[in-house]
Structure formats: structure tokens, C-alpha cells
Length: 341
Image (cartoon, rainbow, N blue to C red; front, side):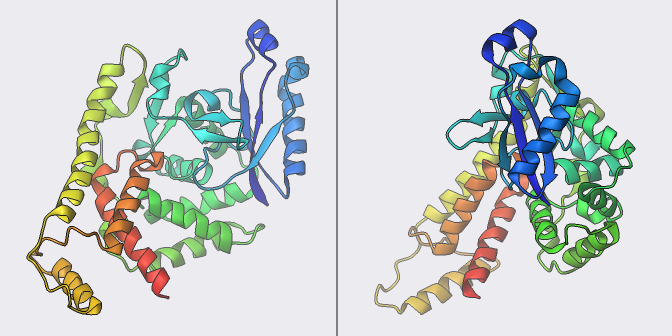
């Protein structure tokens, strides 16, 4: 079964008259047509009174990088707190980081996922992916999901994740890799023991530095006063204080990486063989006190910069800025290894 997102938009006149909202839902179906049928059935059941004032459903196939509404239940704040609709592509796009504070929407309370209980964090990973924060509405969806015993692929995945605490301490991009691996390797009708085995086998196969795999929860835990962050006009200054703690570290990491690459090194013979030059650079980068690299960026350095820029722009990496340089280096090394194979 594939995962689809579906949106229902009201007519403008009716939206104003009856206070109708944009709706979004995620479903599992074999194809788009079936996804629309399932969505319309749920829509009629929940919104029969105003169903005639909504346009036909707009459906897209879910994939990494796209915002995803909650499964099997309509969400009326998805296009306020998480996404904006792109008419050109026919898909939702992640909402800019500063868009929430700029809207006239009611205050939105965000919860840090890492401060939730183990079962709640497992449900968040199964439903929302590697999110760092969720809204009150999404949190309610998580609680309803935990209390609902209806079996589904998402439920089997949740039951497996909550039995493997290591999966909950993975860095966000590692959690993304894990979910992609499970979607491609575990059959559709699998039950939680099969997911459990696939998760543990994948984790046991990781041989990288633990710092590039797991979060340091103790170093990053936040006090209870920061568990709930309210994004309102009056609280913008408070949110900016939190942002000030993290943004400089991102800029500093990028600046340091760029500056270290731009520092000149001693003149070397231009007639030296390319392989020898590459060996010298690799040896220098692995030394305990490396010398400054050449102002001409190596291919690996270019990959590292590209990875760092991508991670900085990824909402899933919010709150993990101090780890971005290490994560970028790991991604660059992985790309090089894949190309060499």
C-alpha cells in the first residue's frame, strides 16, 4: 500500500460565510483513485453538512521532504501550521520558518518530541516522521492513535519502534534513512515482529561513528519551561531568544568551514601528479594537526558544503544545528563511497 496526502478546499464565498477551513488527511491506498474514494467517504461522514461547498479532492503521493497530514483523520490546521499549497506542482510545500508568526492565525503551541514519553515519540516517528516539534493538534492525533487498537501498517511500525528505544535516539536524518529502508524492504502486510527485526538488523549494521548516528540526549535536553513554545505576536521575542541560541551556531559552523577551506597553503609544484596531490590532501585532512587546505575546493569539500546547506534548510533538523557539520561530512563520505562502488 502506498501513502497519499489528500486536500479538500472550500469555495471562497462559502468559506467566509460558514467559517469553513482547508482540510488535509493522509491515507494508505493501492493507487490515487482509491485514495480519493477513501477520503471522500470519510469527508462525507465528518462534513456532510457543508460537503457541497468543497471542491474535488486534490491528491498527491507522499514522499520524503513533503509535509504529511495525519493519517485517517482530517486536520484543519495543516495549511496553517505545517504547509502551503503549491498550485503549480499540485503538492504541499513546507511552511517557511517565519510564516507562522506572520499569519493572523490563533496562537500555535508546539511540543518538543524529545520531551514526550517513549510510546508517544514512537507514535510521532511512525505517523509524522522525524519531526522535532509537533502542534497540539498533531499531539492529539498521536494520543488518539496510541489509544486506538485498529491494526494497520502504521500501527505495526509503531509497535515495533516502541520496542527498540535506539531508534528513538537516532539523529533526524538517520531516522529518515531508517523509514525509507523499512518502506522499501518490509512487505505491505508485515506485522510488528518483521518490522522489529528489520529495525534491529539495520541498526546493528551501522558502523559509523556513534556521533553521526545517535543524539546526545543529555546534552540537548531542555528544561520543562521550554517544552511548550507559543508562537504569538506577543511571544515573538521569547521565540527569538531561542532562535538566537541556535542560529549563530549554524552561521558559525558554515563560516568556519568556508574560512578553513579558503585559507591559503604553501605553494606546491603545479607539475605534481594529480594522484599525489590528492594523497597529500587526504593525508593532511587526517593528521592530528591538519594544515590549511587549498583555496580550490576538493570534490569532497564541495559535497560537504552542499550537504550542509541542504541540512540547514531541512525543517527536520531544527534543534540539531550543532551536529550539522558532522552530519554533512558523513553524508559527503557516503556519497563518495557509493560513487566508488
